[in-house]
Length: 285
Length: 285
Image 1 (cartoon, rainbow over the protein chains, first blue to last red):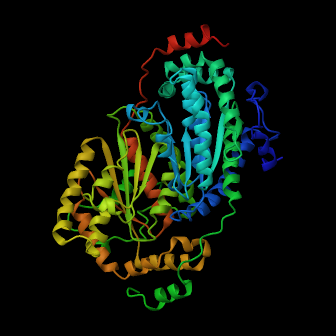
Image 2 (spheres, rainbow over the protein chains, first blue to last red):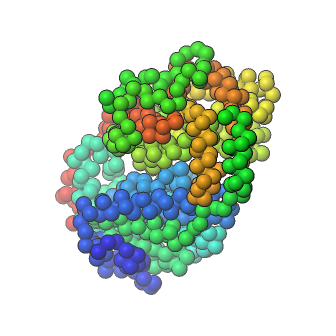
Image 3 (cartoon, chains in turn red, blue):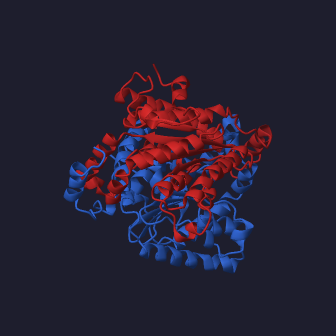
C-alpha cells in the first residue's frame, strides 16, 4: 500500500491528554514497504512536492499569498537535521527559509520569547522551517527552570494566540514532534562517538539532557496537549526509522501544499501583445 | 572525457579587456557528453558537493571557519534561478544562505549600495548565494543611469575593496556570469509567453531591458574587467545549454569546497569517557 493521506491522518495527534508511551516510535503507519521502497517513494513524492512548492512560490510578492511553516521538535538525535536534508532538501532552496533556534542570546533574552520567532516567520509564498522553535521555551524552559512556573504557564496561551494570528494571516502551520525511543537515542549517540566524522554532532551536554528523559517527556506531553489546536495541529512522527520519518514528513508537506489547490498567477499583461513585441519589434534580432 | 578541473580552468576569465563576443554561449568546454550524460554526472558531482559542504558546515560556530560566496549574475532568463534549483539544490539547505537582490527599497537607497550586501554575507561554515548582487549597481545602475557617472566609477573600486576584505576574512568568492546569446533569450522569453505555467516568470519590462542589450553587454564587459581580481575572480559560464551551465557551476562549487581540504573538527571531549558515561552510567537504560 502506498503512503496515502489516509495513513497520514493517523499521525495527527488526537485532542486531549497525551501519553507518548502509547505512541510507538517504530510504528510504520501501516506502510507496507521497506527502507528501499520508501527511498524510491521519497523521490516520487519529491516531484509532487517540488511542483506544489513552485506554484506557491509563483505567488510570492502577493501579500495575500499562502505560506507554510514546518516546526520541527524532538529530542537530540531525533533527526531534525536529517529531515531538513532529506525531505526539505527536495524543494527548490530559493523558496525555503530555514531558521535554527539555538540558546537565546542576551539580546533575545531581553525581549519576550516570541520576539525572535516572529522575525523568522516566512514571507508570503515561502516555506519556512523551524529547526527547534518557540517550543523550547516550554520544554527546556520548563525542565531546566529557565523561567519561573508562572511564566512557563503564560507561554502556552501566548503560543496559541501567536499561532492563531499566523494562521489567520495565511500561514499553514505543521508542527512535527520527531518521536524516538530512549534506546534509539542511545544507539545514535554511540554512533556519533564511534566515528570521527560525526564527533561534531556530539555534545557531552546531550548526555546530561538525556538523564532528564522523563522530565522532557512530561514537558512534551504537556506542551503537545496544550497547543494542539485546529489551526496549528501537532503530528507525532515515529522516528526510530529514519526512512519512515523522512517519507512521512515529505508527504505531510506535500499534502499541505497541494491542499492549497493553487492556480498559477494570471498574467498581468497580454501574452499575444508581448509575443508580437518580441517577434516583430525586436531591436536586436 | 569527464568534467575536470582542467576543463573548468577555461571558465576563468583572463585578465585585461573583456570581449564577450569572443566567448561562445554555446561552448561545451570540451565536455564530450550530452544532456543525458551531464545529468548523470550532476548526480555524481552532487555527492561530492554534499560531502564537501558537510565538512564545511561541521566547522560552523568557529569564527575562523571558511565560507563560500557564489555570486550569480546574468541577463534575464540566463538561469540564475535554475542554477539555484539544480546545482545549489544538491547541497543540504541547512548550510546555505540564499539572498535575492531586488530593486533597492527606500531604506536601502538611503544607505551606501554595499549596506544591504554586507548584511547578506554568509556566516563562517556556510555557503552563501547571491541571486543578483552588488553588481547590479554597476550594471543596471550604469545603463539606466540610476547613479551619476562619478558614483558608478567609485563603485568599481569600492567593490574590489569590499571583496578583498571578505576574502581576507576567509570568504572564498566565486563570481559567475551566466553568458547567454540574444537569440537564446528571445526563445526563453517566448517560451514563458507560450505557457500559462510560466507567465509568472515573465515581466514586460524584460523586453524593455532586452532593447538595451548592447548597453548591458558593454556594462558587463567593463564590470568584469575592472573587478576580475585574484581573490574574487569572474567565471563566464556558457549558458545557452542549461545542462552545461548547471554542471559547470556545481563542479566549480565542489572544487572550491574540496580545495579547502578540511578535516572534521577534532573532538573537544574524550570519546572513550563519553562512551563509558552512556554505557555504564545511563540512568534510563
